[in-house]
Image 1: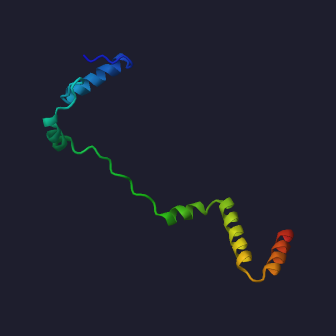
Image 2: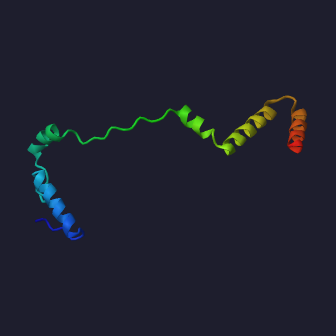
Image 3: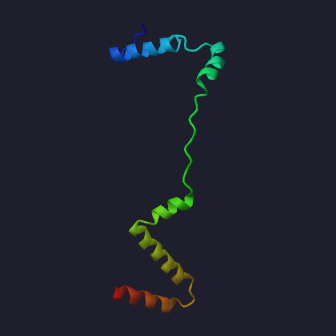
Length: 101
């Protein structure tokens, strides 16, 4: 029996049973000529990645947060004020709306 000092006895027994069931020696591992046969028997050891959500779905979910809605509105107001040629009028309207609220 293979002795692994950091494992409990029951876990070490389980590991040894698994080695015996897979016909592998712990000291040697899988031999080179067995690899092809094991790939055919067990398949390739690869996990398929889960499909990811599209970016627009993630953005739509993020817009459910009230803080993000407030910041988006503030960004559009800031953009409007910055692009507008009527900058002083926009500042007055913004201040008036802020005070009124």
